Length: 41
Image 1 (cartoon, rainbow, N blue to C red):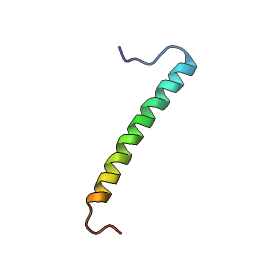
Image 2: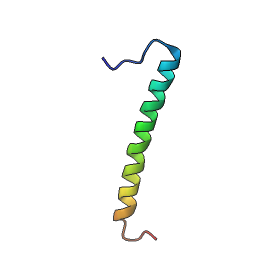
Image 3: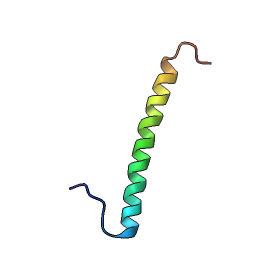
Image 4: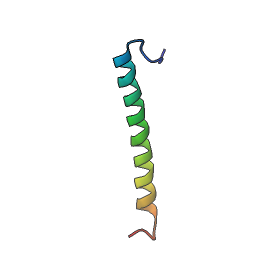
């Protein structure tokens, strides 16, 4: 169902969207840890 498309361009766009989504998740986690860290500057 959520398999990458056969078209090369669409496959690259699909991969870029997955990577961006993962990056947003990592950024959100990092900002949460930074906000909760009592020793942060």
